[in-house]
Image 1 (cartoon, helix red, strand yellow):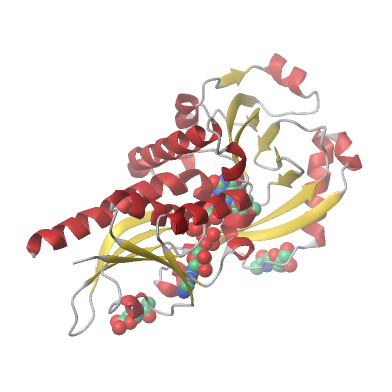
Image 2 (spheres, helix red, strand yellow; image 1 turned 120 degrees about the vertical axis):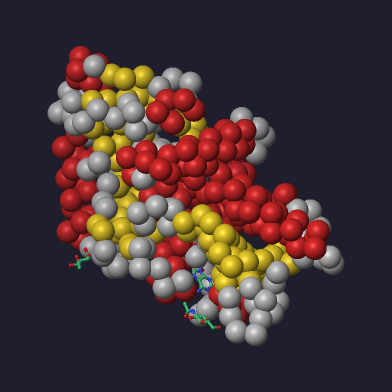
Length: 339
Ligand SMILES: Cc1cc2nc3c(=O)[nH]c(=O)nc-3n(C[C@H](O)[C@H](O)[C@H](O)COP(=O)(O)OP(=O)(O)OC[C@H]3O[C@@H](n4cnc5c(N)ncnc54)[C@H](O)[C@@H]3O)c2cc1C
Ligand SMILES: *[C@@H]1O[C@H](CO)[C@@H](O)[C@H](O)[C@H]1NC(C)=O
Ligand SMILES: *[C@@H]1O[C@H](CO)[C@@H](O)[C@H](O)[C@H]1NC(C)=O
């Protein structure tokens, strides 16, 4: 019997899970169901920097998060070193991260994965930028994802492997009960409605796209960051918990610009060419687990939840897809062996 799997969501998390299920279970039919695609998703707008701060994850999850990050890193860096660099939107960028507290422990995954992780002393920090007042700095090369390009690349992989797509809004996962054997739920922030998950909350962010081709390196601090993409630089650093607004606010735009110009006066010459507000799917910990959804008079529907990636959804999406596919495979294999 041919099994059929539905993946809810066409963001980075859903597309990655869908391709991983196809690769882990050739012959299984995979359908992506989503009501938002491409530029309407949060994933499309994300900054795309590969960064993992373990302090944002509960201690008991560190082992899993580390393995997701490692699987993602290996996959992305292979792409960045292959002939798929341009098509997949994956490339390397060097830069610096600044803090006022020591962070080498919570960045241990990054220091393991990168080849050049280095802690900077005060003297080096002043040479980097005489205007910074941060106490701690770390420099390394990391992956930068051009998220729009990457989503398109993932969708092409999915379609080439025989996947199909349905554009529709689900109001309850149990609507999929009759048509699918297993569901992978990658609905992001919408888990607040779809799963009535009380733990999920928005963390609003605001990005400015500016023209500043003289900037070649990433810079990251909690208040202000910039990522150099091919034809523009993204400026950001806004994190507003529990704010559902997706309308660009001129006051926040000014905050980003003034924080940026304080450190990099040359940003005054960088024209703004775009602006975007997005909501990170915040949660105390990522939900990646199997649930058997029971409803009356019907078999239980296996659902692999995969949502709540907050500010790490590009970084962790591939690795979480690997684990989601492993869980789907367990369910499918168990079902087949019962026949
Ligand atoms: C300003 C900002 C900067 C960021 N920078 C970075 C960064 O540098 N690095 C990083 O790793 N991450 C970053 N992120 C975080 C990243 O964007 C998210 O973690 C990630 O996009 C979450 O992906 P997702 O696939 O879970 O959700 P989404 O991209 O939001 O996709 C959700 C999908 O689920 C579908 N869906 C939901 N509910 C339903 C339903 N009921 N019926 C049908 N379909 C449904 C939607 O249609 C959509 O396709 C940033 C986020 C913001 C806001
Ligand atoms: C979904 O529908 C089922 C019945 O089919 C119901 O028990 C459940 O509460 C609904 N879930 C949500 C989140 O509304
Ligand atoms: C949310 O952000 C908007 C835009 O910046 C702002 O006008 C509003 O006051 C904020 N709301 C809350 C609840 O903080």
